[in-house]
Length: 395
Image (cartoon, rainbow, N blue to C red; front, side, top):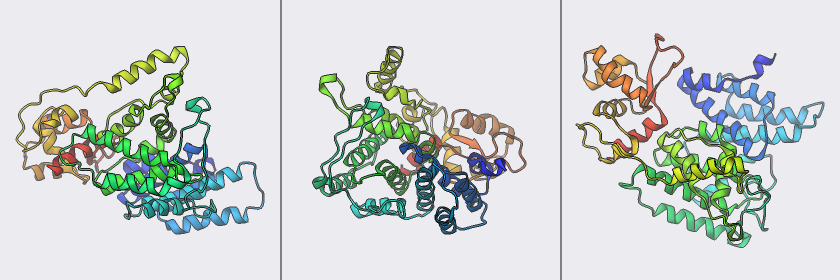
């Protein structure tokens, strides 16, 4: 029975049909985010998620099955309370991520919390009316200073309005990533709810980035949920007596990976204040590297009317990369389809001078990477490729 409990989300994401792939993305993100509070889901939830991905049940049926499971379970186990919260929240998040709806408002943020923690917290969707502190591992037991309960609504509305007025036009992608990191950090520091702030912030962020046109890779949230939370903590912690200042570079590093496809190491040990001696030099070196400006290179001539900043942000090697990224866009295309759309006939030259460089430079990926010669092989953009595509379309 054990094999039925395990879900290879990556297999669905990599090789599944489009509708299965989107469901798998949502479930993997939803389950992965439970790690921010040290929670983990049950095998029953995994089985239920698989049934939904396969199309046997709807997402609402999946949520109802999870609720019924805990109401009717004859024998209570010691971890039931932990898993019940994780299971219900995962199912709620999965549904939210599959909906193309979003409200960039104070009420919209509250609505996300209410829907994520429906049937879990009595205060779902309600801002806290008391002040809070939280002991953080990454701060060695110290706490971030959160916004006073009386100022929560005003603080959120101010941050949202400021963000609405921000102009992204012509902004290099590394600056976009930095700005998004600081905006998300500010929303999280308000900590408007008694519990569930990081998970709510993550869902709000994913939905917001989608509303801006970014094709974000939810895997980063799923696989690095604990890092995401610790990076938010470090971005909002300052202790003059200990010589510690706000350190947003860790969070910026996360968003550069998310939005620009950078392959940054997201290790929690880098975030620990007053790290052990054996870690200190490595951490200091990492921080120094993150503060260095992005290296630039000079590309070959470009036929597209695009910004010169592509060379320093994305390290584009030649015009063929831009052309293939622009052609694939949000589609999954085979070699023949790509060549036809570009207007090329020489398959060998196309593979040598366009397809292979784009693959090697990390702008596109195979639908079936473990079987390059798969009869249904297609190509799609990576996170880095989508970031470049968004820039091309914007221009």
